[in-house]
Length: 273
DNA sequence: CCGGATGTTCACCT
DNA sequence: GAGGTGAACATCCG
Image 1 (cartoon, rainbow, N blue to C red):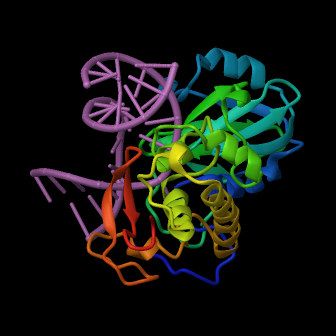
Image 2: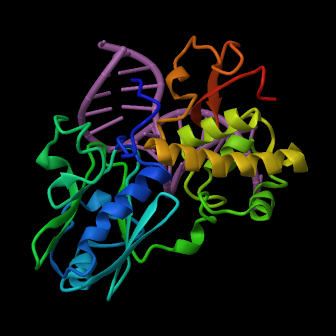
Image 3: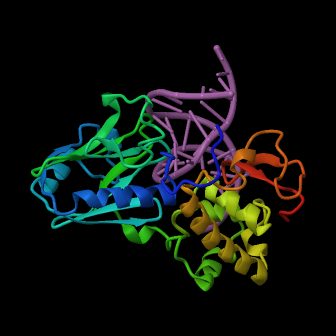
C-alpha cells in the first residue's frame, strides 16, 4: 500500500494516530449540543476499564453532549454527565450521522459490515455517533483516567519532552511510543520523526545528548505539523519506503527493517545514528 | 496459505 | 522495578 505524499488537505487514512483522532474529534463536533436518546453498547469486549453496559446506558441516556476533546489517541466526549472516552486502536472508524468521519471520498467503496459496529449513540435530534471496528482493537470507557496519559505530543514543550525521556534505559522509539510518557505518537509518526531527526530508533533514551533531545523535540513538532497539512500520519517522506528492500530517500542507503519497541521499524543506518 | 499491519493491555520472562 | 517479548483481538492484503 502506498499513498500520494502531497496536496490533499483532508485526512484519508482510517487507522488512527494522533492526527487521525484529531480529525475524528473535529468531525464529532457536529454532535455537540445533541441529547443522547439511546446507547448501543452490546459488545462487552469493547468496554474497557471496568465500564459496564448498564453503566453506559444509565449514565449517558438523556445526557447532552457539551464538547469533544483529544489527548494523544484518546478522544473524549464531554457531556453534562460523565465523560465518554473512545479509543480506535488500529482499525476503529468513527462514523458520524452515517458517514465515515474521515476519508469518506477515498474509502466510499470500501467494505463495511453492520456487524462491525461496536458502540453507538443515537440522538433525540437525529443522527448517530458510532465506532466501526472490524478487529475490535479499540474500546470505550466511561470517565477514563486522563492523568495516565503523558502530555500531548502535538503541543509538548522542549523541556518537558527532555524530562519525560531522560534517564530511560529503553530505546528512544519505545519511549516515544509509550502513551504514558508522551501521548499521541504511533508507529508511523515515530519512524518519520526519528528519520527526520537523524536519530537511530534503537538508541537508549538515556544516551541522547541535550542537543539531540532538542532536535528530537523540533522534529516531533515539525512532523506533526507537516503531516497534518498533508493529510495524515501516512503522508510522511518515509512512508512509501516502508517496504523491504527500499533505499533511504535522503541518502540512498539501504534502509534497515527490524523490530524496535515491539513494532515494525524502518530506518536509515547511515544518517540515523 | 502465511505473515504482517498506523494499538493497547496483560502475562510472563530476564 | 524495568524492560523485552508474545498473545489476544479479527480482517485485509500481498
